[in-house]
Image 1: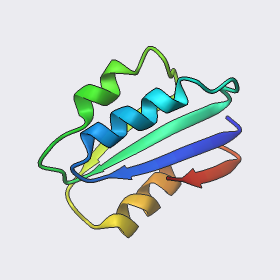
Image 2: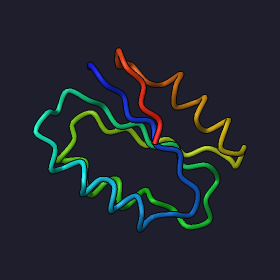
Image 3: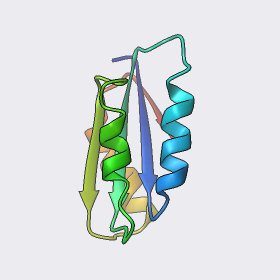
Image 4: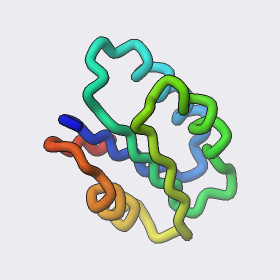
Length: 87
């Protein structure tokens, strides 16, 4: 994997859908997507799962709320790409 998109989310399923839909229009697919759900009361898991067929390297990790820094750091640890992009 060349690029890793790390996407920490908290109660934003509509924005997750928009972001994943936008990424389907990319011509270069040498990337993974790591979504960290940071203790949301409104889960994005079903939305993420609906895009699994579009992105073979899509991962969803749900954790108890620890704040945005903890979610970003976890995503960075889980990422496998040469370049890290935090959205």
